[in-house]
Length: 281
Image (cartoon, rainbow, N blue to C red):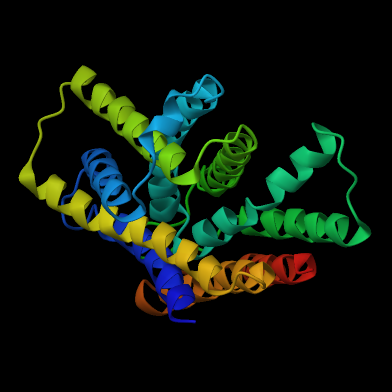
């Protein structure tokens, strides 16, 4: 279970870093750009992707380019969500995004959904409706007009990214190679954006990006290792990861950052956990 615990901690730690970035004068845009350089290097060193696999004619470069644009965009949306809506609602919304591929499989790809899956999706939408409701104004900047839109953007963005990764897998692209390509393209996209905006670079922001990249890739690496450790029980990894992130994110947000949630928001957190439980095979 050590891999699962490490992955959960890394995931929530990413949210914590995004939460405190402004307090320490870190430009999140530059940190995210450096994060993808760090993640690319770690992916190359630790996952050892077969780069020749990317040269196949079947490589879905359209999907990879879409990931290159969406990954940094949704990362910045997550940063805005953590800042304006808080860690609790942002982490829960991110984890609820797992239901979007299920919905897409039914609406776009003609797959039949079981009653259990439909029930899980219904509970997930109820949870999302409760989570995007306005929280009580708190000392850490959460709440305020328009704050509801950021968790919604996180939910939708990560859901679309999940669909794109599944499409990449269906095309036969090796996971490690596709992940590396997506990271490199994401780094190029956000670095190009920063250069176009003539942003003044600073080592302070690069340091923040280094820590962010370690935590971000650690989340992915330990999640992969957890699946490898429990090859016959993917449902355990799936459920423990999602419930663990929602629960730990709630504890960290409420205890350390004094995030104030309305009763409706608390109901949303409970429903988010229930939605994951319903989906367990």
